[in-house]
Image (cartoon, rainbow over all chains, first blue to last red; front, side, top):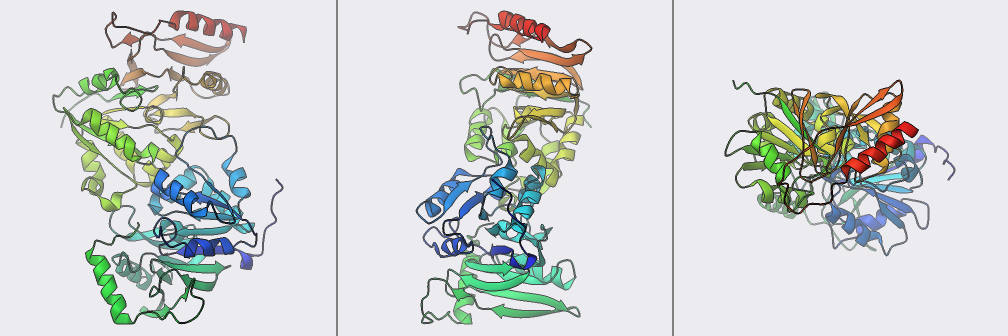
Length: 272
Length: 262
């Protein structure tokens, strides 16, 4: 196939989820359906990369289940399964309209991509108009940095830097990442950025945050910047996907806090 | 401080993941630990920490060993081991590396500093072993045929040779290996499935096999072309057990003839 032309930097699309999609929301397709709309093509080719979790069959099966009957051409790519591949990674990625990256260990994700030179291939695809989407590790990787639990305790980790800000994920589901992230921004270790709850997706066109969407009422995102050593926070309320009217109101702050405490007590229950 | 000789047993294929009913190779590597209750740690990184592989490891090793495994994909759910990888690995008698994808495994290891830890473990006398990617990783260069054309991948370099695995099972491997060695890959060792190359220090001390007829070769480039020298292989089973036909002599002959013709 012929090489696609490079698109304007302001038109390149990244969709970063704090958590959600088929691996975390088996009964809620809203975010995954939204991802398909990010490609201008009526039946986009969508490639799943389960690298961060070690390419488990369960994730691959869940991906195909979620996308099999929708207007798209789903494929997945394993960097662990031996044999049988006759085409190069560059060829496979170059024909995709959307690359969907799963969650797991961000440290492993980036190390494995680099070992196969897949990081450069993905950046090239993004520059040629392929939508980069993902959750958790597969969302933070596109930013300049994030907070990972790849080595155990939450810690700062550098990403590929396609987006200049930082991202932390599972802001509600795994609240122990949040203080590490805030301190890193305050100390200047990470640039200002976003904290996204499970179920929240940030849609960027170029470096501009175009839309914030959610699959769950009550989930939200937080913008944080360091100004003169002080943290400045701004809560972002997402558009609730699938809500045709504005009748679905978000629960108030007390209810949300109670839910967060409840999730925390249950040991997070979120995805890494 | 114990003074033990560094040892590596590089398997062309075989062991608990590939030989369900045949424990000869695993028994052999355990015997090198010279202890009744060896501490054995499994590294399933090359498979992406596949659950079924980890289960098979415990099935084979939980008796009579103190068996453990390290998951580099789930360090956040650590059992304690993952919090201090170095102490855990350096206090083992045997580290068993599973098969899978070599490039993904080495990338992951380096990201967690495991390359250096394994180097230290080897020097301190922890026996290192594994099939397939678990063999290739110890050498300076490895033939990897994962995607696209086969190529030389740099390994950890504990053994200053090249390595090729599944030599009998995947017929194109031999041609590819010869061609890479002809193009400048360093000399090295090729092993069939079921065959183990046992190195003491960096010297090949013994070649063993779980299957009658299993073969291994030394391969090097010479002025006259590629020279493939069959190695003496010790079959670990009993000779009078029902065995597959011993094909290796005629096969080796054919191979030598083909090399001469080429």
